[in-house]
Image (cartoon, rainbow, N blue to C red; front, side, top):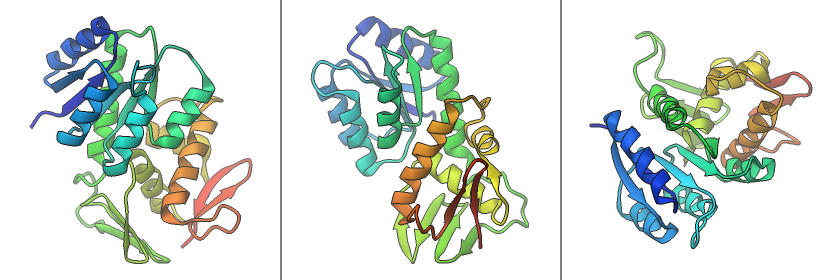
Length: 233
């Protein structure tokens, strides 16, 4: 079944144009022009990805993102009219996966949608060799590649695709220090830039909160200052 994408923006011309480009790629698309309409769609429909404008006249994009993350882990791309680092950090802290600054080219957004959907479906798919174990388990942490699920002390943990990808990559490389640039390139699939370090830090912090990891006395993810991150086990 084709991926179902929610596009939310109060600028109708932008929303409709993005919808056309995504439909031309074969995606099922639902459009919403207000935060209230988008909230109803989020609560009543199943989506594989959402594109949310931050500046909406009623319910803003951050509130919609909170609504999504209460129950869903699918990727969310935020649209913003200003290249504000504060907006970006807030969105990432709430669980956003990517940011696109207006004005943008529709094909750029389509490319980012494709990248997020690939990441969403990659982990847990049979990309691993047959002899590779479907589970990684150590120190009370269990990662299941087949179901893309995570358990800590036998309790399920709900992670976003990016958070899951970070945890899995570190776990697959446990015992060695993974440089921040390597982690970013492996998980995000993009060239590492100076601003990328903040992006990684925000997602690591959010991931630690969910798996109950104390940054001062870490049980799982250790920060090797000036180098990167490691999981020992």
